[in-house]
Amino acid sequence: MKLKLSDGPEDDANHGFNNKRSSRNETLFWKGGFAHVFLIYGMYHCFNIVTYQVDFPSAVLLRAGEIIIDETVPDFVSTPRLANGPGKLSRYLKITKADDGLSLLESLVLYLAEDTAPTAIEITTTPRVNIEYATNFKLKPYRFYITDHKAVSKK
Image: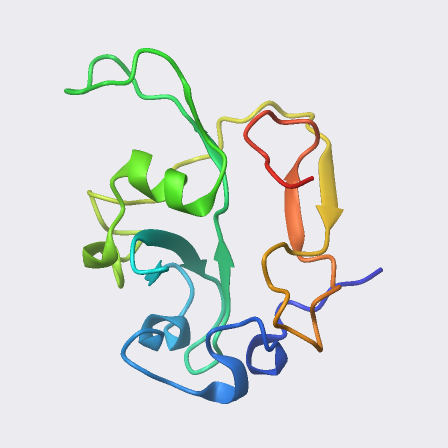
């Protein structure tokens, strides 16, 4: 199956559905490489990476991760922590709404780093989770994760 780069405004699970802009989703309409952070349930921050071009709302939500911090950094985490949800991931990485709009290519606070993952990993593709309200792209295989990784929830 060949995936489109993005369904953007056609995807009713996208906060930029129908190209509707607001102060909450404005960064979705920026060019790729910026952070889009929003609050859900009034308490959890969700971190997205904007992925496409100006005026085309498209981003990838980071839902989970394994937090490993170098002990040379102040307040290091000595034991890896599982961030098995987007709220936990943002909390452990101290990502808040204040990070919305940061350039992930230029910021010294929140940035993308060179890949250090093992060269051979198996990726599982499934429909996204927690978008029961969506209709037109609900079942598209737009969720990707490392197969059998312990931080992945809702397999």
